[in-house]
Length: 146
Image 1 (tube, rainbow, N blue to C red):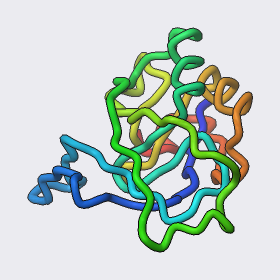
Image 2: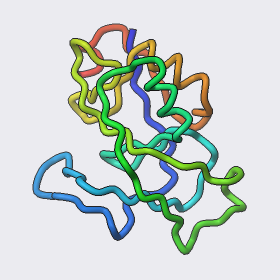
Image 3: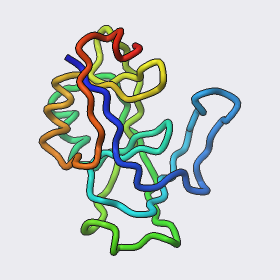
C-alpha cells in the first residue's frame, strides 16, 4: 500500500530561492523556506518542495528508505512570523528532494505532483509529528496517478 500525503504548509519560498519557472512544476535549485507560522509538524511543504526535520531525515537514512536526496535548505522566518502560532523552538530542517519512481522507491510524485510514500516510509513518518498533514491511502499505484 502507498499513501498520498499533503503536509503542513507553514510558509513559502524566501527571496534567496532560485527557481526556473519556465517548466511545470517549477525547478527549484536553491531553497529558502520562509516560515510564516509553524504548528510543529516535522514535514512541511511549499510547492513543489518538501522539507523535514533533521531527526526525521536521520530516520529515513537509518531505515534505508529510497527515492529522495537529502539537501540543504535555508530556513528563515518572515516579518509576519508569530511565535504565538508556532509550537516550540524551531529545529533544523533538511530539504527532501523527491527523485523516486513507482517501481522501487519509498518516495515519488503522482502525476499531479503530490507526494506519494510507501508503507515503510509512512511508518517512519507516523513515528514523528505529522498532525496537520492530510493523508490518504492509495491501494493501487494507478489510483495515485503514478
